[in-house]
Amino acid sequence: MAKRRRKYKDGSLCWDCKNAVPHGEHGCSWSESFEPVPGWDARRKDVLTGAKKDRMAESYFVHECPEFEKG
View 1: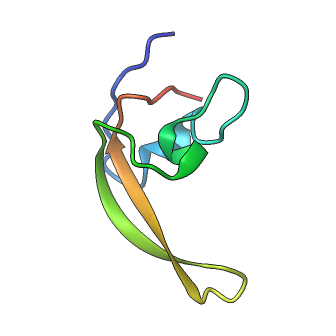
View 2 (view 1 turned 45 degrees about the vertical axis):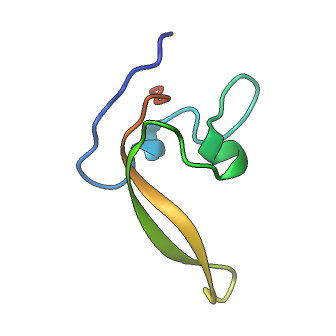
């Protein structure tokens, strides 16, 4: 299946992408190594992580991605 771009208004496009979790032939530069995908239309958002929510991590709300595949 050819990769295509898709726009999202709310949340992150990654939530509906089969490349969001790397396995077998699927994955993207973000899900595999936390490197932004070239060609993204994304907004950076730092989020609290860890059991005590005491650490900050770099994250993104992706609105458009060339590697999106419905999944």
